[in-house]
Length: 344
Image 1 (cartoon, one colour):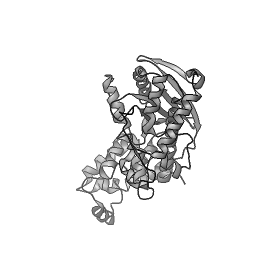
Image 2: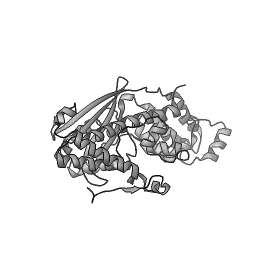
Image 3: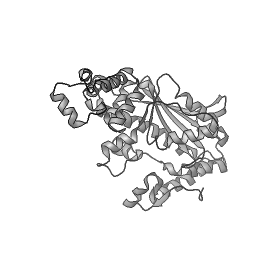
Image 4: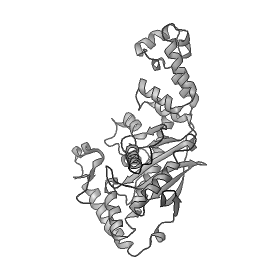
């Protein structure tokens, strides 16, 4: 793994290191992680896998993998969907050909809402198309419309999440053996059940269990109205999973609404905080501090040690890191949604 390392180790406090994005590890983080790895190998020497992890083996048409589940109570905010709908219906710029200045002129003439434009000789046709989209109830189509006319990180795009029930959300995070075309070794999937976040973690005990874990993960994205929630998932997680599906000839991911929390976080906090990493935001915004965590970039080294030695100790922080990522993702998503469209 030394020759395959895909990150840079930079000195603590090196402000220029932030230009490397997620491909940097600060020297203190690296030293602590290497020390933790040595401690875990010693602590779990000759300890059986089943004595450490309380999950279960699952089987599907692709084979077997290991599933560990955990439960976390959450406070799920109520979304003021009426306020969201009212805001959208008052936005004339959703109609092609109408910008801010034209909207101001139209409103001064009494065209206050999108339905009002139905009687406008020039814009009624385009307004009717927009209203059909809004009336469809399809969050994916409405997201596309809002993202095209505004930006994909606009708060109203996030507001479409209110068109879903909490049980529709699928919080998703993966751990891989590298940045490109290498196996995914852990799939973290969070779902809401009776006000609790249930985190399903599909772990590869060996590389040949990847296809089974992929199959199990896809089951969560094939319910009636799934809405995917990730952190940087549009750039990393989803393309990576698509690549692995193609590798096994398993088709492609279904097109479902996708809320990338990194995009909304950048829009809201890019000028306020020096780092927009999930681990940084969970500390700054949510007040969460992790113990014995490892940088995500070092997960391959820990997993490689497990494969080489059979010692399951290095898997412990990988699973905890992924579980906390899923939990923090859900908390941050609900935090942003409440600030944008929460009921007073």
